[in-house]
Image (tube, rainbow, N blue to C red; front, side, top):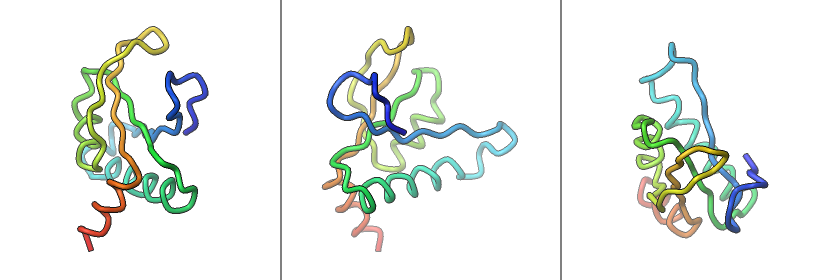
Length: 99
């Protein structure tokens, strides 16, 4: 998802939302991995960001399992947000290690 009003240069965010009936099945992780692959391989993005509210521990865990790392906190759209990011070079390294 392109976040035009996101502060900073990196504006492509991996984003997901699942109905609670589907939580805990690995779908968010699988979808995030596919979205990262699509962004890095098909669009040659240099970096993809992720964001969540601090209380959403499950979302934080998904991003971390997919290689995104914590970048800090900010106020965005009147909410306290935790920022995550993954650089393409790190993603490529992780992708090759998993083969």
